[in-house]
Length: 460
Image (tube, rainbow, N blue to C red; front, side, top):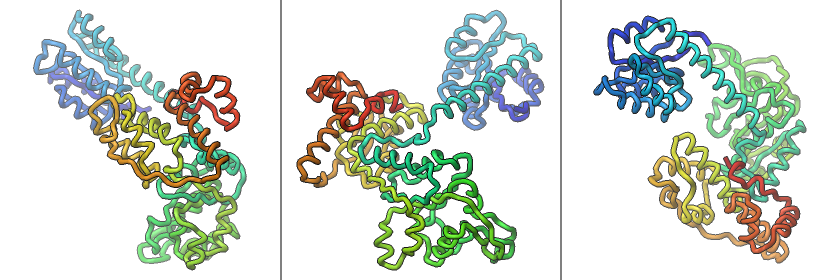
């Protein structure tokens, strides 16, 4: 990393020393502040990697309380920031206190700029190494189905199908209501495929005006229409060698459906205003929240295009049908947004758990995510309540009356719920279910379940 791109915040109330330090670090991207409020404002604005901070700050420059408070607030906002505190000569006790509270290092006045520059430069190097280590660690831990919580029978079946289909270069259609995670599954198909090193390009056919969608997909040549001042590559070409995800393909206009059908048959495109055929090698994954067969009957979707995009069809169950997985997903999202918002929330209250399990979730997973994100911000206590979530129970839907299916579904659901509530603890789950540990293990084998997916570690 070049020094000019290294962001350094200097917090110093002595104008003479501040001027000296700015000169010393003139090759760096330097921001300055003279007190705590200004320091926190600059921290939020510039997100510096290293902070060089005097412990003696106004309104009591002879004390260290304000400096220690600034240090604490800095690390709360940006915990990976390297803070080097500058102390008075011989003030090692306060310097060590600062290090104990999270400062990276300390330096005693009087300032020797060469030594201080070495210290700051080392802090940048250490920070860069730690950042790269975190990046590599996240890659190691990332699963191809990362972000998909499959604790219900329906979602387990979907994930198994994704894993089977992904290695095969076939066009895949994802059917599911809005908010059920169709794009997440499309990206999982890409990551598990031999095309994983290529681009995964997504386009929402319902979000782009009809007049622009053709150009967005196929690109255009210079002068093809008013405003086409240069040649532009379309999304299909950008996805060459990778995966093209067409979301809400049922909203594609009929004339464009014909051009898309030709592309799928011939695997060549022509840009708008062009005459040259361009070969493109992409895997096509489509999604819709509508019933394609109904659209075909109404003359709104081409039957031949439907059979081209639906070589494999995967039906994604709505969230209201994922009873066993609701609480696990809710806990996962809670941890995610607590980390983002830096909130220390321990979990859900009993009424929140009941509301999550009983609510009909018409907006599916997207609605759950939005409500938990809001609840993390609004919650006053250590537990998220039903009031924080703002949900009310919905009506229960009628189920199949086949006695064998009802018994198996009830037994499987009871096991999943028990494992969920006990965070995968076999002994506690067996006690809750009123069976022995060996019996529970037999039932887990019977239904192809594993306690590992329900543990606190798995949900984190």
